[in-house]
Length: 142
Image (cartoon, rainbow, N blue to C red; front, side):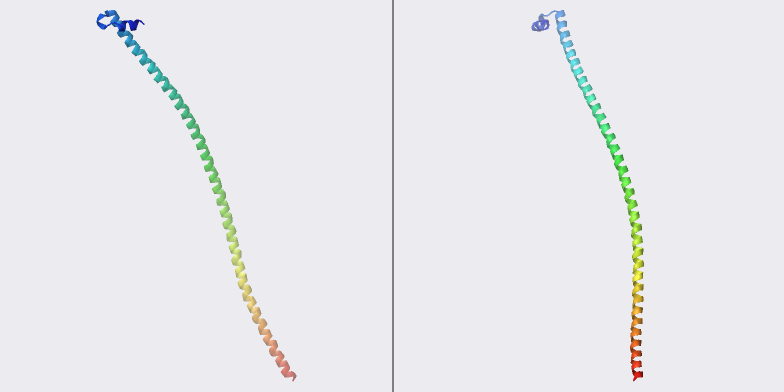
């Protein structure tokens, strides 16, 4: 109230004391306003810092969990790859064994065919001989 009363008086009519009081009041008001704004900015900066720190901690926790999950996934993939390699090796051995058996059976089939042809040739030869012998026996019997 005193400030407003003194402010209403023209500057030329104020005493030195009143002039100093006015200027002091205005300077201290600006200083308090600047201090309040600075405090508010500082408080906002502190709140922002707390929020950012909290966000950083959450991000670090998330990163840690993600890295852990990645390591587990890589370990699992490695284990699966090793299992698959074992299966491939086992199947390769089985395939080789089956190929050897097929080759053996093929060789036996070829040998059977050869022996069967020889047997048929021998039978045919025996039939021809028997027929010739029968004809000779008939000729001799006459």
